[in-house]
Image 1 (cartoon, one colour):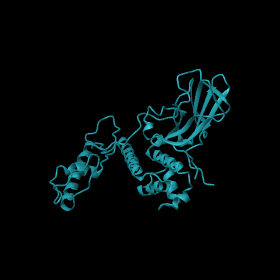
Image 2: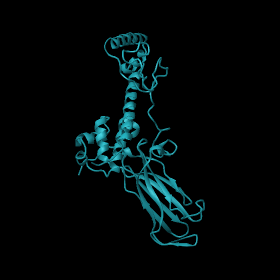
Image 3: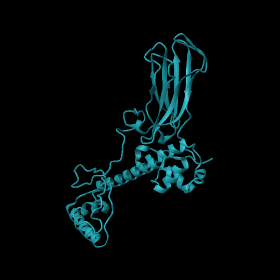
Image 4: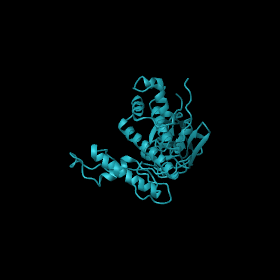
Length: 332
């Protein structure tokens, strides 16, 4: 039996959020032990476990092997790793700026200075770097001139007491004197906490279904003159997860054609629930008719979640129930 992995809080920063996403990917792949994953890739068991631990951002190579062992899409994960690395660098720059230090990244500074210098030999026709990217070019005497100019500019900024973090959000109440334009890291559109409506904060953008289950009648029931035998499938309950938001929610869809008028409150009532057993937190949603619906979100860094649904047939003391297993798992 493997050790239990510690809980993660995706809101704590880019490292824990990225680790939460890796755990979800592993859960979708069947939660295989890390030693089995290591047999299918070029990374060790300890490196794979550290990638999902959330203490530091794994290297690009380790991330690639983790994704490979889980059968993930490396093209998507490569971009996601870059976003996490950029967000981590931005957070570090913000901390340095708040501390009142001068933060100047030479590679960005040289890109600015390069626009003031003659083109290097053999590079006169080179295309400019695309927005948000910096190409480190220039050798020999040309680079010496660039560093000389950089030293002068740095000295001037230090003398002026300027805190300049190029390529990172500026957290000071005063605007920076200069800041390069870089590609923004995608973010949710609001704070994500337990109970947040996932549709209002952008969690639908990368949602994935971890598991679905049938919602089945426990006994025979009547619906608009029809007799529905026990075991009739009245709908589907799903546990839906957003890697970017680091949380899951319950979603219910009734069986097509089951109830022609979803607004009829005389037929049945629907209750769905997202439950996090680790701390007994529940997100419950009830409505007095049978229709598609979803619950509030539960952050899964603290533990796996279960999706449940119950459809009560009005006046018949009969219900249909269904639930998923608890995902994503935190064991290895």
